[in-house]
Image 1 (cartoon, rainbow, N blue to C red):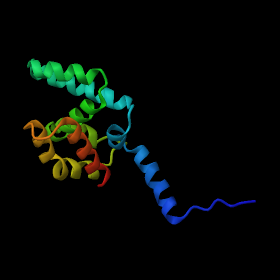
Image 2 (cartoon, rainbow, N blue to C red):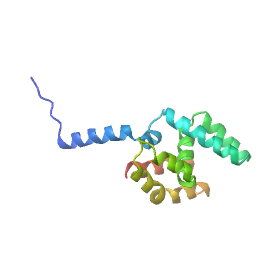
Image 3 (tube, helix red, strand yellow):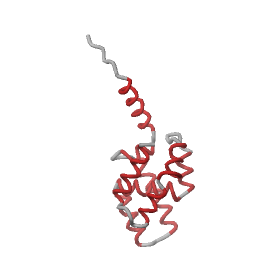
Image 4 (cartoon, helix red, strand yellow):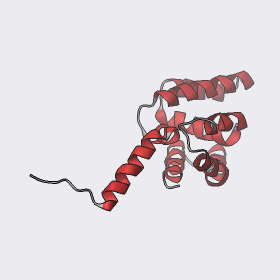
Length: 137
């Protein structure tokens, strides 16, 4: 007869993992398959197409809709920073920690988004840095 006793560290890790599992932005940034990420990306791309028909946007939308997770993550992060209505929509959700997302969007990632838009950082590096910034909040 053995008793499986978790250390305090293991217990805290398990609790944190459960919390992360309920955090939609964490799921969007850290999982390979996320149906909500697909839906949000399609919605953002529709908003973008309503504003412009620039060939670069057409190419971006094409890559985003074939479920390229890095492209989808980049679109969502950029939309959080540059589209106030989308940010409000996300903050109002029950599966998002509004204070964490607010700090992330206002303090952590804006300069990183600008670096991406200015061509100073690759898309993959951008997404990895942005994900790390969120996870370490």
